[in-house]
Structures are given as C-alpha cells and as structure tokens.
Length: 388
Image 1 (tube, rainbow, N blue to C red):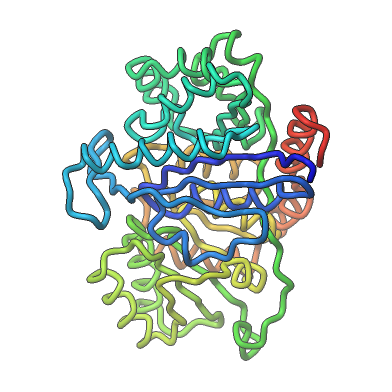
Image 2 (cartoon, helix red, strand yellow):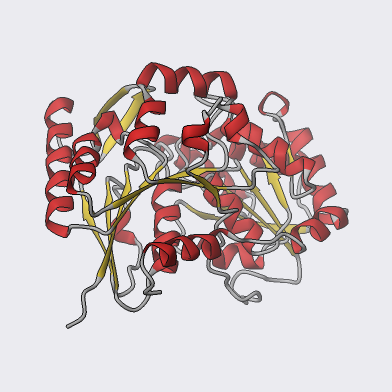
C-alpha cells in the first residue's frame, strides 16, 4: 500500500461560519488521490455539513468570544482554562498521531489563546511537517493589526514557526505587507493566492424563483451581529409596501433567539421567505438577482463565484475588516456598500432598487473576475510533494 500524504487543518471557529466554510472549501479542493485531510475545529455546527471521502474532522470543545481576549465554553459548563487545556491536549495528540506532512492554520497564527503553539514547536523539532498560515485578504486596519501583532509576538511566530504564509487575496487590491509593516524575512514567505472559489450551483430552481419576480437574498453569515442589517431591510419593506421583487432571508444559526423570532414574525407578514440556517447557500446565491450581506470573506467568495451583484453592509466593530473589504470591492466595481452609520430603511431601499435595475458596471466587473486561489494552492502542494 502506497504511503498517503496527510494534511492537517486547524480552524478555531469561535464565532460565525466563515472559518469552517473556508477551511472546508480548501479541503474539498486539495483532496486528491493519495491525500488524507483531517480538520480540527471548534465549530458547534460542523456536523451539519457533508464531508466527502478522504476528509474528516476532530471536534474540540467550542468557545465563545466575549471580548477580544476573553472566551468561555460554548456548551459544557466548565472553567475556561480547563476547556482550553482540553482543546490543547486534543490538538497536540491529534497532530502527533496523524503525523501530517502539511499543517494549514486558518487566520490565527498561535491558535485560540495560543493553543497550537506546543504543536507548532513539536512540528519544528519533528522536522517532517511543512507549516502553512492561511490569511484572508484583510485582517483589520493597519494600526490595530500591527499593534496586536507586536503585543502578541506574532511577527516572531511568523518568522520562526511557519514555512509559508498563504494570503487568500490580491496584493493589488490590498497589500498586507505594506499595511501591516511585515519585514522581508516574513514577506519572502508570503504567497498571494487570490480569492478562493466556491462550488457553483446551477441557476433556475422553481421552488426559489417564483412568479418571474427578481430575487433578493439577504444573509448575515453566522448571524451573531446581523440583526441591525436585517431589521433595516424589513423596515424598508414595511415602510414602502409591496415591491416587484421577492426576498429570501437567512439570519444564520448564531443570531440570538429573540432577535431571530422578531425577524421571522415580521418576515411572514411581508411574505419574505425566512430561514435561520440554509445548508446550501450556493443554491440561493445562484438564483439571486442581488445578494445583501455584511461582506465577510467567505460570503463574498460565494457571491463572486456565482457572478452576482452584491450590496454590502459591513460592520465596523470589533474590527474594520469588512468595511475595508467593502471599500476595496467598490473601488474595483465588484460590489456596492452602505456604511454602517448610514444604515436605514430609506438608504436600504434606494440601494436595493438601484442595484436590481442599474447594475451593468458591477455585472461586467464580476463576470470578468478571475479566481486563482485553488490553482495556486495546488501548485504549492505539488511543490512540496508531487502527488496531486
């Protein structure tokens, strides 16, 4: 039996859906003959997704972020320090048992509360595993990111414990090397992959596209902070009355129950199709004429994969990542956005109507947009071991 090439992936997943969905998208595309992929995740809903052959996951106790550096267990009622100890033990034992050839870490260089540091140190001593840090296109604004990385010693971690750093974006759109003051010893290890494409679903689903009306899909990703955007959208429909378009609303599984129930009741009165979680978002995106979202990395990749027009309502706290991304995409004519401080029913209705009826420039830019993320990652894996 020929030896397999083992890829271990880490996604800390304390908030939202973006980390686990990005990790799964990468895993599904790196999977090929002779490759095994194991994902370590704290996502409480990872079991709701379908996992193809050669890909499996190890679930560590989930943690909820209360503030920038304060986390508590998601379900089990134990001391946070104890919960983190359990997570770290599982991660370390999994790595040593699986003996990966490649370790891909999503976003957090040290892991949650530096839980993967022992594993990274072991891999450096072990000498067999190439370590990859995968960063989304934008982390946060320049000052916040550089201050955070300096305070936490992230630059030293990037320099000493990672073989390569994959940036899932375009340097010409946003340059983290310049923005985050990254020294040459680290920047020479950085590979700009471009955005990561998603599975594309065929258009025309009779159960979604009804009565020949245009379709607006509004989604808040995980939904934890999506209520103001969705409240504003429903207020626009309540204020302006019936429209010549239909709406499908997906709040996300992490929106607080009282907020979700409020939206559900109002949506029903407005004939808005409502879901708190939709397993196949690509099905909705493929049939949409406009997608309204908060502009998280994962959602934007799915929207662009389906060549759709997008309206972004980016949050501004606890970080400016979504706002910066929205500004970058607008500069490239790939989307439009509403600044958080301008959010309201009047602005929402104006933007929605304009994008449904006057979006030629965006449609042309989106149709010409090229995804390179998976091609570049395949090239890098092939460079490590010629098996794919």
